[in-house]
Length: 446
Image (cartoon, rainbow, N blue to C red; front, side):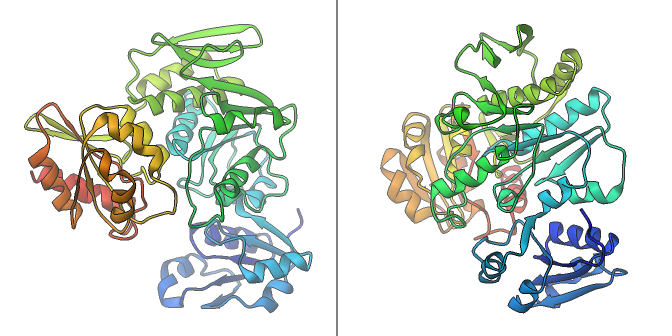
């Protein structure tokens, strides 16, 4: 892909946009960056671009600049229906996402992981497996390091592992992973997509440019995911924790079994440190990707056995007066909370935050069966109470600290207090990490 002397516009100056602008400038392109924020809000980002000849258009998006570009690279946070992008699209200007740009400069095989929940755990575990198998491995994408930084670094890499969000897939035109995993689908980001189906369609684009030489790792137990199996060009490789598979990877009676092309490997799960039914699915998806791409079974399972839970995903905080406290701040949608509730009984659930527009009703069966007390916080509290409040003892708290104090008073010994919000954090906190730290501090203060 020739970039030298091309007029290239980078839309959005978050971490990904900054990395793209640097990469394009280093390749000799004439780069312009555009962002609706003011210079004072972008001090750190602009400092990273110092030393490069890059034009800036801040506090505005000039349609003329969009229309005079040879190529437009869109950051994941920028909505597809931005009027200036639509005008450029009508004018026939090439528009791509950062992962599309990066993939054109990456020679190593790519393993890509998407889904509503579990992406980060699965991606991190998969990267660790490749490293333990002796591969020079780059891990990034939607977590940590943008893919374009790998292309920029010129490091020698045998294997690329990337977490991929629906936003990143919106402007791909040839992005082709050797193995792509779709972990699950549940309502999310309905503040961005007009309908649930639009969100699903964005996720499914991860398979769009695969061929029969590639693999699609699919959750056999997720109806929406499995409906796609017959529509894909890639070889479908399922994983399941509820049924035996002739071809695929499944869990039964404390053993994970991997079957591929008449070959079988068995792995006993008793010593696995990563707890929770959702993590069993994440483990099987990661193992499937690794083994399909040539990792050795023994080293693969050694990595699984040693792997610990990531921060802010069902993380045990402490036990106080016979009650165990868990922090699951990364559970920003209903599907993630459903999996968390499956892992406990006799729960006091602290939920709520910024409403993302999806229905809370899918939580109803689990709340009826497993949640003794429901404590709601944040701007979504009212709607959550309307949809779920009649199912169990439901209360409201003005702050997270008040919710923790209330939970301590009403939870009987032997119970579990779980902060699993089903909402994003931006109504009350900077991000989900700050929400987690505030919860941990409140629990430590009991």
